[in-house]
Structure formats: C-alpha cells, structure tokens
Length: 144
Image (cartoon, rainbow, N blue to C red; front, side, top):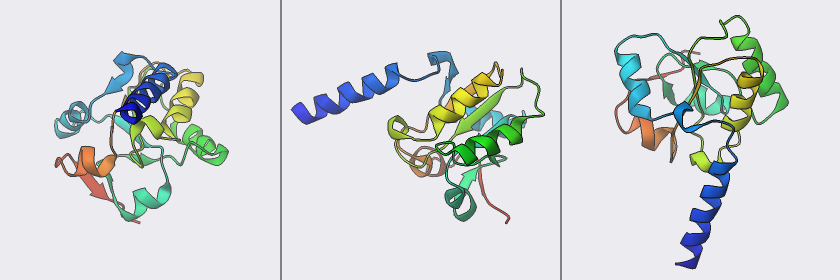
C-alpha cells in the first residue's frame, strides 16, 4: 500500500512538472480518428529510431529522433523548420510509460520554444504497443 502511494505521489509530481497544459494532451483515440478521417495531421515520433524502423509506428508519423539527446532535438528542429508556426503538431514516443518518457518533454519544450502554438502530446500511458497497436489504431511499418 505504501509503495503504490509513493508511485502515485511521484506520478502527480511528474505531471505537475510537465511543460504542457491539459488541453495539449490528446488521447490516442482522438488522433486515430483524425488519421482515419484523413485530416492530414503533422505527427512526429520523438523516440528511439530503432523502435520506429524495426516495429510499427503511428500511420503517417515522421521519425524526428530521440529528443532526450541534443542530436535528436536538432533533428526534430530541422524536420519541423518549414512548418507554419500555427500548424497543429502531434508528438509521441511510446517507448516506456508516459510518466517516465525521456523524450516527450524535451520535444514539446523545443517545439514551444520555436514558436509552435498548437503542439499536442499523445498520451500513450503504458507504451505504443499497448495503447495504440493492440487497439487496432492506424499503424504502419517503416519502409526503409
């Protein structure tokens, strides 16, 4: 009981340190519905390239690089440089439980600092496999 209370407390602490607000968190089904409706959202995978290239990823997502590393942040910045600053952007990682993700927070902060005004964070609470792939949401394998 005490251990689970500790994890809940740590989770709430981590959430209070997040750089986004509640309106910027998107549940997977919302993004899946947009993809199915062919609304052409800008979706960027900000996690480890190995997972993107060797597994499935969200359909139409672009590999931006692991944003826990300076070279990953640089890759993300180059990838989005030509987008209009008002473009709705969805970012996700899904390598591990959301609360522990080393990539999503730096990615969000970098996009925000670049002046993007509509950055959405896809809430993959457990991981991409559990919260997206197993639910049958649109996914694809890398073609490379």
